[in-house]
Image 1: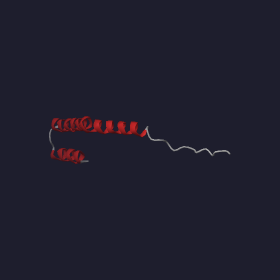
Image 2: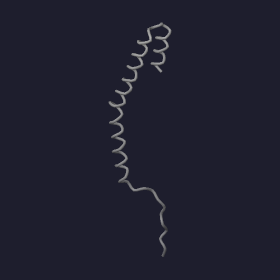
Image 3: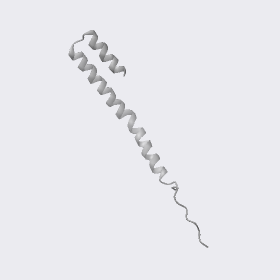
Image 4: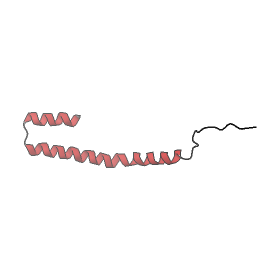
Length: 67
């Protein structure tokens, strides 16, 4: 959302096209950097949690004992 406002300001100011393209490239580079920096640890933690949950018993149907 912030970048959308930034692009609108750049367009309104009448900056050259190359400045707009450099700004878009910087935005994409920042998103990719944040993805590779912050997402993998969370994804690894999610995988560990999934493996940990496999050890807990699952709720299932209980059988009645016949006498």
